Image (cartoon, rainbow, N blue to C red; front, side, top):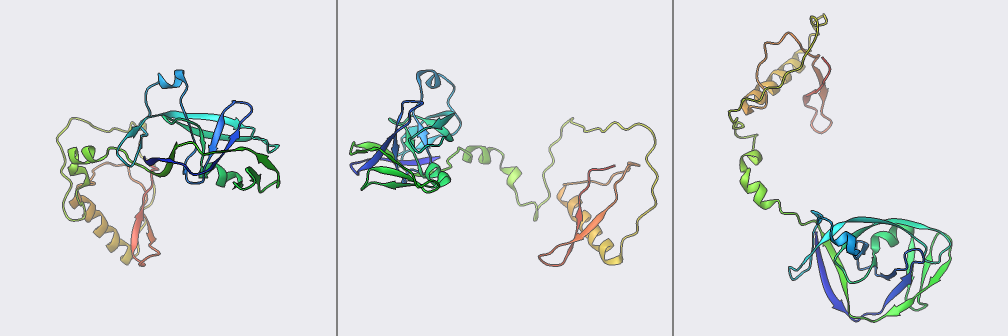
Length: 235
């Protein structure tokens, strides 16, 4: 997850949460609501989710913390905050949008659209960091390069099957349940044969001599009107 973190001298509202005693910086420019870690949380293993500043600075995260905020609007606001290495807690656009809360900087208050109640805060002009953009940024590149064969275009080339000793066995008791053959209409039969030949060519499946089988159900695609098989897991 990438974040553009920069200092700003803009006026922003600070609101107090009574149960936790935290003073939240309220900013619609912050996409996600975050809280700084406690001493105990900082000792926990770091989360796989990383925040990155625009200059490449890494911001560690430590999971989430659930809080029930009482910010003077006569109702409780439960929320799951991301625990991150930030200097102060932030109420972002996700929280404000979810609960329909509007910032009124001129009146130095928050307004609850549901109840029309307001809660007065304070204006901060501190040069505090601001999270202005968030994007998922996980290290998949090295993994994709290492296992590049998995992402080959199977439509144009067969899958490369590696030799191994792994087998998959379904233990079944008794003989197969008898059932009459279900003949397919000629157009469905042609489409089914073509599809399974294609799957065999790609290495996705192989012919079986098992006495167990499932009915083949063909469905028409809404997009182009062609036939395709509907998979079933029942024996």
